[in-house]
Image (cartoon, rainbow, N blue to C red; front, side, top):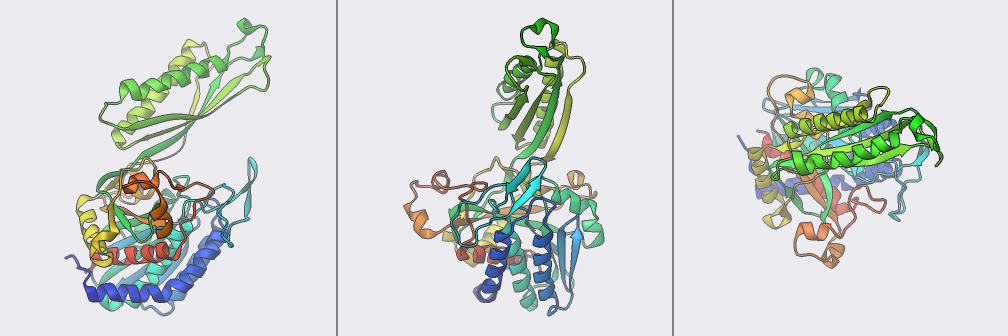
Length: 436
């Protein structure tokens, strides 16, 4: 059964969202001002859990659990028989110095192995988790308008593709509920108040690899007495470029990027080793495995050709699968969002080469929870104020977004009230459309 968002229901969602906007806006500003790195979201998760527990005190059938998968927070609202719908938001920040100019900009820093780094919510995860609390507040107030179980997730460590795995490995579906549908959203520099959808392949699989090539160092004047890892690394970098051009079918999309190459300390010393960090992306999980195999084959072959004294070290730092949005579910959500926001507020989102660990919540094998896959869908809410959007060149959403700051920019700021309200209402209308 699919619930339509009638005019009466839509107005109720707007009214309740408006009533919670002041408190959620205050929560958002607190989170934005005090960002924390992946798996270090202790204050962040405590603030979110406190806010959810405040809702639970007045909501029969609601419970909140802290510390799931490290710093994750899980809230359940049980409201009679019916399906279980999961809403997921992330909450970690990035090592970026904020330059937005807002009066609650972050001045936080964190100590890392590389020294002290500035912190910023440059991807809007503070917005996402604030919207989760807002959606919980609205759904709790509207229990007479839906039936089933609502599962709300504040997830850590999305930026390093670790939080979804950690929560699932901590028994998320075993300890709480196994959802029938998984929903999520992300902000983008589209027009604030608008919602974008894409069915099918939506976001790329990604892997980050660390590779060490072992040589035999020595004096720069006597290269014949050494095995030079710099030369071998240079051949690796060059050869890796042939994977996409010669091993990937032309109709597919793939990226192989060597983002870091480090070797040596000064010009007259041939070093003992060279280090490479590699990022790969594709929209097909099978193709992605082929990319990983090709990289390993090339690195090992070049090391053999260069007479390396030992095999290279090849380590996957982190990875995630491609996001596939269930087609039928996207159509249901597009209809619900159209009924609530109006058709003029919807746009077609293009495929993103960015990546998320959100799809692990729906993929039974990759997520490690067994059984059948769970349908999932992920949409996009606009974050650019109307005045700036109108002044931005371009005739399409994609054209205009090319001229605007994107997530992970020190200037990116999605936290305007229109976007916050849209995020809450999109989650609520989407969830109700999937509940009896």
